[in-house]
Image (tube, rainbow, N blue to C red; front, side, top):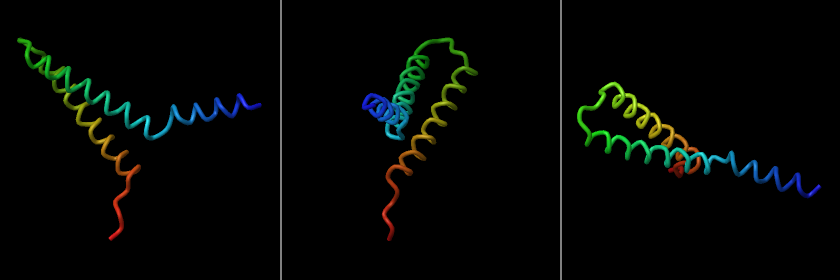
Length: 76
């Protein structure tokens, strides 16, 4: 039954907070690039841009919260 232990460990790694943090950072970087590219094109859809920027801000908040959970501040 060594296989089930290996799969369980792999599954834990797929859902780890560290992996989630990496995924959020990648999505944030993708949105940054998309917003930069869309800013160069004219005319642009303001509603779409607002939604992209709002999503990017929400991602930044999620990243900050997860970073705080993973690396709590030192007590004084």
